[in-house]
Image (tube, rainbow, N blue to C red; front, side, top):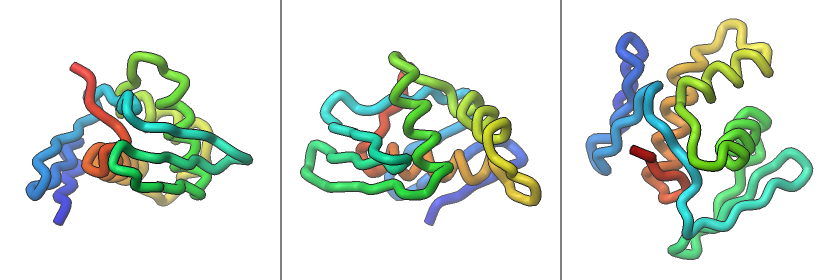
Length: 113
């Protein structure tokens, strides 16, 4: 079970151990193949697992990560989503923290130090 504490901007998966905060910088892993097609993102990880992200916000986040080059902070992803989409009534920071943590746990993204 993933623990998200929006008060402190932390998302932690105790099973895998990844901790993602707004300051965390992420990028696609080097061993991942990704492609954006018509607003949807498709990813193949090193273990041959295929992931499709058909949600507009999720695809937008992955496009931002892909074009960032050396990595992008989760804080910048949150800001970009809040600027691009009508997020009224939604907890964007919590949603993005959880989404990014899930992609790190699945081997799609990696943290950059």
